[in-house]
Image 1 (cartoon, rainbow, N blue to C red):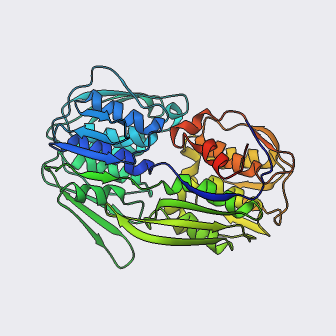
Image 2 (cartoon, rainbow, N blue to C red):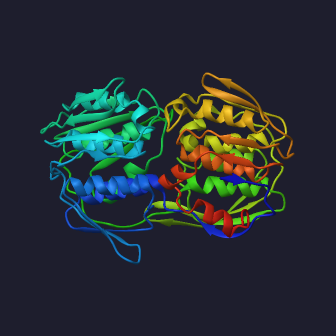
Length: 436
């Protein structure tokens, strides 16, 4: 698909439900006793993979015609042996968090995924989960296909995260739900805290202590009894990133993005774009289901190069590809470092973005842990392609945004992966007037 120079964007749009919260709402609802209701669930392929897996392990999950999801859980400790392999598609979050659930149940599960997911290493999760007693048989490099057998009873874990990873933290906490005793996770660098918020909301005995240096110590009392909840999922800030950057870059634009989750552990891109000179106003701030939410009013702005603090990375780790696009149109140089995590996402996002940016006319230097981008000073880039997205949804959407401010258009080799997280992406751009 080719994306070409767009007229000024205008209008009000909403993005799909938050992917991280959607995954967790299905998992925890499936472990509660009784019926939970979830409104605003992201109905992308990744989340649907989580729903299918929880059904395969005993939960009753159905969707009404009005879009409300109803989940009848099996209770903590009640997961059943799946009869077939759990197909995770492209979803690393589903895979790693579900491994945590299975780790403290006496069942065996095989995880499979698509070509992209099967390249992603799982050792960062299998290593700590092995300590609770789970056993693993993985493909070379600790990759999928992977079969694991949980331990029941499992051994409570006291674990300090060696890398900032909400997925690893969450997997350990989910394993702790059905483990006797206290599970303790020490997080030197804070990451997104949806798991902690939602676990407490479902009634788990969980406490978070924040030390003077910012280290978070999370303790969870095992053998929990979760109570069913009614959940309203806010709009995904990682999806809002694309219309937000598009509105900043396309001259004359003003766009309102409604109902966006503004959890501080996820709002790093907003802070970054404001530092670059972007006009982003938060209105109608409120709290929904324990999560801060607001509407974003974004106005086209001249952006300046930036060298962000390395500590910001966990709060915008999924938004860096589109941040690189913003930097490509800024005045001056941007230097991004401390992004080793991007090497093991759906693709090697540093290498894939660097190659694609060069292809559309950007001067780029790839670093081992980041990238240096010379901005165009607000001038349209030549464009080009087709861009090799490596089956990565965020790469595809980032270069689609770049196409809207290009001279000759940007062609994307495959837009199908976008369905994993943002199935209404092109429809939203049409609503804003970006594409016909």
